[in-house]
Length: 212
Image (cartoon, rainbow, N blue to C red):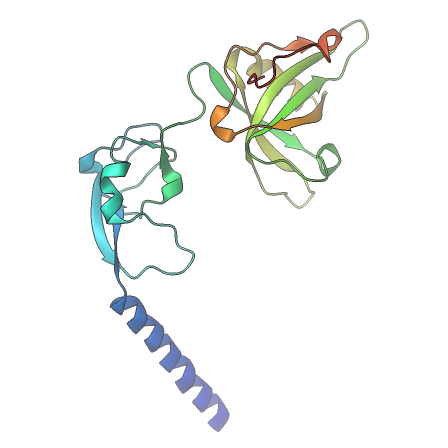
């Protein structure tokens, strides 16, 4: 009992010390004053500041960076009263006009050993059926989810709106195969002009650096 009592006193002292350090090292950070939906421009009246003791690992934006935030677009739904993280605002929001985000569930056997990351260029090839020619859909990886208990991973693909619906339908039927291409910068994600290519076009000359 004496040992337990000593440990309790030590833990209490450590907790008090941590709280004191947080209180003594408070930082002015940006806090949302109003709700801002994803894609909307952040205005001056949407922001306020607050002095907080920032915990390690917590994402936050310094109040002195306020001018650099105003005019940026929300990349997530921002709620009043929450700290503003650097990942929640930017100049580009996806999908843009003419684009779609297509979620594809992939089994572990369908993924490359190195995995998929945002910015990877992929080709989703429709499995040919009797009497029908296979089609390839080019897209870029926007986000990658965490594996579920079965090892299935949901991958958000950014692609032209003209082909996104067709790929989603094939994926739901389990009739696609994934091929990984060259990685590109995430900021340069696909333009809506990229058309689907038939299987006969595989290996055709695509200009180097083209978003497709």
